Length: 232
Image (cartoon, rainbow, N blue to C red; front, side, top):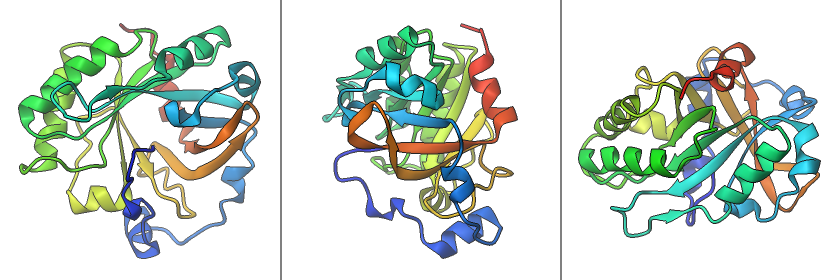
């Protein structure tokens, strides 16, 4: 995921990666050679030719917004509606995500309400992107408040996105979510721990010509369930 001034520690150290994954490094060639990708995109990918992109991917995860109305730098993603339309027109299953910067428990609840209001209801699942601290209480309190509020709004799958070192620093427990999506630009997917692994932010796809793109590797049995649901 991209945000202005993105924290440099997104690139987790090898030690942290091994601690989290509990395995020795492996070559990422298998991940990079997958016939089809799972990508996540936002306004930072600019114009996307979805007709070209569609045959190369199994799933897209689209950013809906940055923060919520309670945050001073809140904004809707400039390309969200356009990306939703492109995905729909080319029969690409998609989920929606929001980038969070929770200042309080109430802010987290408000963010869930705002996100659900703005997210396209054809989204197969909803993602909380939690990688930036903004409040003084434990981050766990905020993500719990968010997921509990979302449960009152939808029956669809809820997924937590974060990265290895941030999860460890904040002792994040994703057990209230239906899945966990981990960014770790090391070599091991750790599908026994992460349902979806963001292994690179340097992907290249035909049809996304103005920027690089995040690419992901799935534990397919779990991740397929995120977008096969027909619940509201």
